[in-house]
Image (cartoon, rainbow over all chains, first blue to last red; front, top):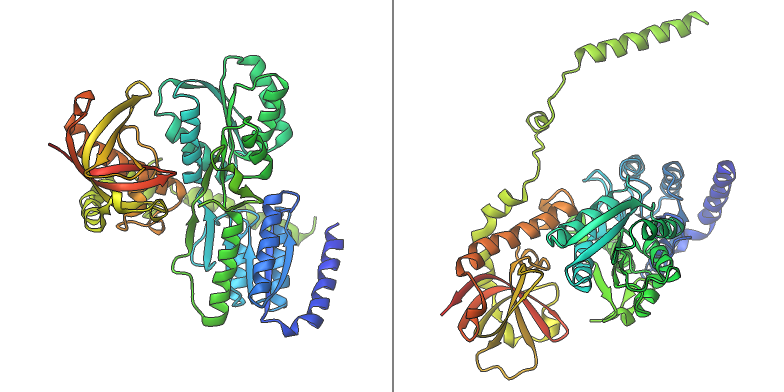
Length: 311
Length: 195
């Protein structure tokens, strides 16, 4: 499979050598698997913006495999890409790839996930997960009327965002002594696990009236489990701002989610790449936070495909 | 096994033994003395900045009643002078707010002032420029900083007033950081005077 991939990559590279001469340059857009629409949005929005600014976009997925990611970076280097936009495959594992590109004088703009090194990428533009978690937790606390027992579904525990989101949920919720967590389990960001864990939690702790989830996929699983168990009274939140979660918010089965403005983040990255390529202007700061937007029934109508059109 | 392999293994073993013997064991909690990386303390950090932040907010503040909803964005430094029309207490007395009607105000906005002890949002952090996200290692520290600033304002501006039901009807003037949601303006105060 990897061999096939390498061969395919080589072919793509050869073809692009032949056709790419006319554009202002090639911009590589490298993301995790587009089977998650969140990452699909990065590729479609990034490619559209790059085209609009006169570049030839090339989109690839590293499938969260740092070795594939490194091959893609090497391909970008040998193609003399004008810039690389990347949602990386691991905070430590990606440093080598980024360093190689930078050594080859190719500017790198990271989106969505940070790496554990500064001074390499020209930008690390990420959604403010801490602020987003706190913002939607505040809405949830109100929906719970400041009291009750609840459960938490954590993401993949080795993932930074899992910790950041959980910590910031609790930074808000733990101030209210009448909100008591009775179960906390990982559902590994997965919808099916979210469903199964929720089913089990509802059996063991039927007294709960709320569930907080580290992302929307798990929240959607939890919501469906609650609906199937006839527990429409349970107050559920997630984080991401996916259309699936938005549908549950609209139907009143979820309290809310926090939108990570990934479309906006990607556009900003391409714009900053453009400014650097054309004028040598570097972003004012490397680490940039884009605020999340708390989405509830009051403003869910303005959310579609990770784009918020409300004021 | 070839001679070369044996030699390689011998070198590897020697290296491991050398590393084990030469390593210095550092007690937990003292890493900072060696690496120069000192654990982040939001409370200390915010305490040192507090006077500067209050001065900056006072300097930038405009009358809250003069702004349109769209002007608030992520947060605006504001002043508010008026009469307290309501004191609301939720979550067993831990989430208290004042409703204030600005002097001579005839518009349709509601002005809510947070008076703790639990504060919602990061408005105070977001309107100041003494510290930026780049001064912190990660999002969590940046978030802790916002919380620490909220604790500062609670201790310094709100607690001394010992607010309760009796504040209704009194004249109030304050400076703070405001955000808007619909027609509701939420203000986190950094200074309050009640007459």
